[in-house]
Structures are given as C-alpha cells and as structure tokens.
Amino acid sequence: MILHRRKLLTAGAGLMGTALLGGCDRFAGTDTGRRTLQVGEDANLYVQRLLMGPATLAREFPAAMISPWFKPNGTIDPPDRAYRALAAKAFADFKLTVDGLVETPLSLSLADLRALPSRTQITRHDCVEGWSCIGQWAGVPLAELLKRTGLKPQARYAVFHCADTLEYAGSQDGAFLRPGQPGAVREAYVQLAAAEDWGGAPTATDAPAADWGQGSPDPEPDDKGRPIRYYESIDLYDAVNPQTILAYDLNGKPLPVSNGAPLRLRVERQLGYKQAKYVMRVELVESLKGLGQGGGGYWEDRGYEWYAGI
Ligand SMILES: Nc1nc2c(c(=O)[nH]1)N[C@H]1C(S)=C(S)[C@@H](COP(=O)(O)O)O[C@H]1N2
Ligand SMILES: [Mo]
Image (cartoon, rainbow, N blue to C red; front, side, top):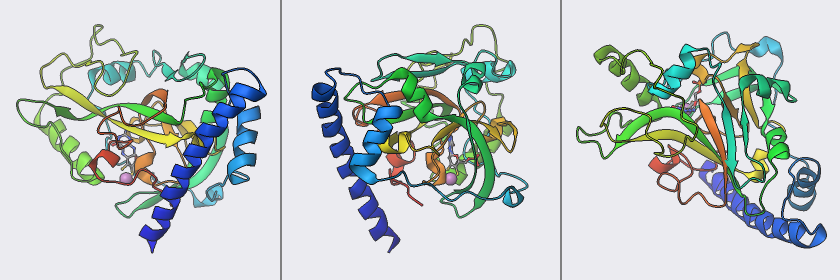
C-alpha cells in the first residue's frame, strides 16, 4: 500500500517537474521576454496556479508537544577539517553559497541569513529507522533566497551540499565508513572517535572551502581518497514550499553541531534523510545525473527513494 502510494507520488513529481520545465521556458521566453524567472512573487504564484493549487503543508504542532530531546542521527560531529575550522570559531567565518543555475550567485554569512525574513515551525521528524521527534525550527525560507538569486530557466532541482564526509572513494585502505543504513553512521563515528584523532586541531591552513560539492575540492590534507560527502536534493516545487527552510535555530537556540550546525534543511513533507544537515552550498541544477551516483542524495545513491514523502 505504502509503496503504491509512493510510486504514485514519485510519478506525480516527475510529471510536475516536466511541466514546470516546459512552462518556465514558455513563461520566460514569450510572456516577459526575459530569461530570468524570479521565484517568489511571480514564480511561486505561477507554480501554484498552474500545477498544484495551494502548496501542501505538513502538520504543525503546539509548543507543549516539543520533544524534550531531539535525537541526533547520522553524522553527529563532522570530522572534516574545513568544517572543524569553522566550528572552532563558532561559525563566524561560515558562508552559505547559493549558485549553479541562478542569475546572481550569493554568499551569505549567518548574520546575513538571520537578517532575512524568517519562518518558525513546530513539526515532526520521522526517521526511516522508526523513531520520531517533534522540534521547533526557525530559519530562512529557501524561496526567500531564490527570490534574491533569481533562477535560470533550466533550473529544476536544488542540491544541498553538506560538510560531512561519510566515506572515501578510491581509498587504498578501503572505505573510511561504509554504513549500511543511517543508524550505522553514528556507530561508525563513535568507533572512529575512540580509535583515532581526526587529524588534530584545526589550523589556519584549513581554510573553509568556498566551493563545497561532490568530491571537490578535497580539503583533507591526506591520501585517504576523494571524500564522499552527504548531499540531498529537492525539486523546485518543494523548494518554494513555505515550510522549506534552511534552519539555524532548534527549539529557540542556535542549532547544535549534532543536529547540523550552523544550517540544515527542513523539507517537512519528507522523511528524515532528506533533512540535510551541515549545509554549505545550495546548487541549482537541471539534472541530478552528474552528482554522486545520480540518485539525488547520499542515501538515494544507496537505494533509498528520492521522493521520501510522509
Ligand atoms: N549532512 C547530513 N545530513 C543528514 C544526515 C547525515 O548523516 N549527514 N543524516 C540524515 C538522517 S538519516 C536523519 S534521521 C536526520 C537526523 O537529524 P538529527 O540529527 O537532527 O536528528 O538527518 C539527516 N541529514
Ligand atoms: Mo534517518
């Protein structure tokens, strides 16, 4: 039953993506004579009117239902030197990059992000491992960022590049971590932390990478191989949903490292693994093919569904 419903949803998302692409081309090319489609006022309205009616929101909960502890899962403390350099300075040097198929790429500090319009929502996080937590998230709607960058007409997906390396490709010693399921990642990190030092204290040369992405660049000054980092992706319809935010606060406090500091995605109508933590870069792309194994996310590349609807 669930599979059946998911298949329908996936098929629907595919159709919608095609319609969106075709529609954007026509809209940008003939109606306005410009090649930029501004998400926000016009595109948001346009997407809603033409394709789906009003955006569907996930259920929101009263404050009394917030879980006393939001269980961290997957990566809980990224070992990457560039990330640790940022964390050591309380993310004062952090810059979120928004680039790819946009008209105006952006690079925003946490102060910049906090100065933008924000949204607060109390929602339930459901992990495929069978646990749920209710938390209050505050952050900047992704639509607000896309409104400022503008979109090229080819843009179809937003990709979230994260700071945490989960395994190394082409490593001579074999994989650093090769978890079979999300829960195994945490176990592996705990073992790793006990077994060895993760490269020593961060130094001035561990400059934060400006161009986070799949396997590029390699900020690790060692020969473990090409880092395979966590990543995720959503289509433009989910990208402009009002509940899709890049969250910097959890339960009224800055996001802890274990829950994805300094910035994590909340895309509330989908499962836990879509909620990318440690987001360094949002890249707008036309296709997911060129990223990772082409599945659209770290876990999708390992067999999980791309549209992880709840
Ligand atoms: N960067 C990154 N994002 C991630 C993960 C991860 O390992 N790395 N794990 C995912 C999974 S499986 C879940 S359930 C949630 C856990 O979020 P939490 O740690 O705030 O509970 O983050 C998701 N996002
Ligand atoms: Mo999860």
